Structure formats: structure tokens, C-alpha cells
Image (cartoon, rainbow, N blue to C red):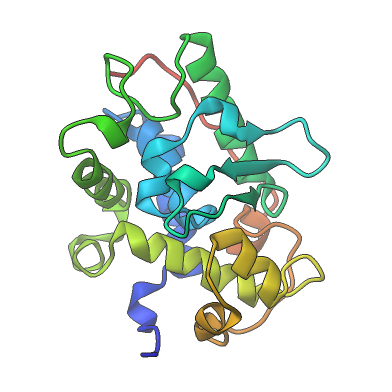
Length: 221
């Protein structure tokens, strides 16, 4: 297998700049774009999985909160549970968005004005690619050209392996992202220096601070 190019991995600083920019601003589809970025870069979901998610797939009240990736939307056709307890800021943003969608009587996590999921919209997959690139606009033109939504998934795997703890061993990360074997996941080992942190994508790790900003919900198209 070819090595993973390091330029395809978002740095800690880039992760926070993107998240902070989306939380701070309320332009256009920023709220949806934050959720798309979170699911890709902070949960490791594939674009096909993101587009099919339903609000019922999220188990926030469980002792260990997860996203249930149903077998029918998985590349491998094997369902899995993606841990949300690895990062509370990601969980909180997703929980608020799910609550917002449910308050509007929506079934799907990401949908258009008519309530159709992105996966069933014309050009839905390309829409997710485009929205993800819009989400990282704060990183500049050069990085936007280098990165894609799949780089978000690669970044999640890399950061999850770099932050060592009993929760995030190689097998745990493999299961979280739905890889078929440990050899696939192990390609991401050593891309970042090993470190220890309580939260995977919270400010305490990304910037050495402890304050996080909640997502702000407004009526968006």
C-alpha cells in the first residue's frame, strides 16, 4: 500500500481554525457545513454515509454515545457504531443539530428544503464535496485545492491514532471507521507525533485552551 501523503492530513491548527470559523459565523449554510465537517474530520465517516444519516442513528443518551452506521449505507455492508465519547465538542454540536432537525419534524440529518436527504438529491454526493470545501475556506486557496472531504476522514484516523489512550488503540480506530483490516488502519500510524489528551478535537488539545463554543442554530435554507 502507498503511504499517506502528509499534506492530505489536517493539522491541529487547521482543525480548530475551521471549526472556530464555522461556529463564529452564520453565513449561508455554515451550520450544515459545520456538521458535514464534524462528521468527516471528527468522526471519520465516508461521504456516502454522511448523506444517508437519519436523526434516529444518533444515541446521545447512552452511557457511551455513538452514531449507528447502518449496514445498508456502509461501503463494507457491515454496520458499526462510531464513538462520540472521544470528543465532547463534536458530540455537543451534533446533538444540537439533531435536536434542531427533530424540532422541525425532519427525518434526515442533512436534507434540502423539501426534506429529501442529500444522498437522494440530484448531485447530492457532489454537493457534499462542495460544501466540505466551503467549510474549510478559512484555510486559504492552496489548502482548499489540496484537500477533499475524504481527507477529513483520513485526518480523523490520523488524529485518533496519535492521541494515545486505552480508548483509542489501533483496533478501536479500525472498528470506528469501518476498515476491513488492521493493515489498512496502520498506514496512518506515525503521521503525527504521539500525544495524550482527554478530548480529541476540543480546544484543550488543538490550542491548549479549555473553552469551547456551542453551535448556534438559526433558520437556514
